[in-house]
Length: 193
Image (cartoon, rainbow, N blue to C red):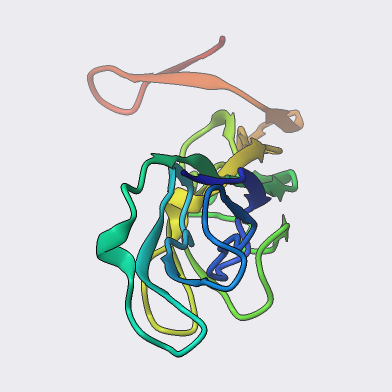
C-alpha cells in the first residue's frame, strides 16, 4: 500500500509537491520509483504518487509481483491576499473628468503586474474611488488573477457645485446653486435653490 501526505500552501506562483509517502509491504532490498503530482494554482487535488517501478537489489523490475493500493492525501493552494486601497479626491465642477490615479496595492508578488480599471467622476456628486483589478500577469504572461483574494478599500471621488457670481446694480452676489428662468425680452428671474 502507498500512502501519501497532505500539504497546503498560500499561492506564490511556484509548483508544490510532497515526496512524503509510505510504501507499506515492500521488501527491504526492493526500491520504489515514483512520480508525484504537483500543484501551482489555487485549488485542491489528490497527492497522487504513482509507482513507476519496484526494482530488486539487482535493478530488475519486480513491480508485477506486487498488488499496489493507494491512499492519497491532498495538495492545496489557497488564494493570496491582495489589498487595493484608494484615496479621496475632490474637485469643483469644471465639466472635465477627474480621477485619482495613485493607489496602493499590498500583497502582489514581485514579478507580477496588474491591469486596473480606474473610476472617474465629472458631474456634481460623490462616488467610490473604485479601482478594479481586471487582470494580473505573471512573468510568463499568464493571467493569474483568480489566485488572489482581492480586498478593496475605497476612498471617494467628489465634485462640488461650481460657484456662480452675478453682478447686480447694488454689488456682487455669489450663488452656489441657482435656477435662471428666461422670459420674454430681457427680463430674468433668479431663484436660489
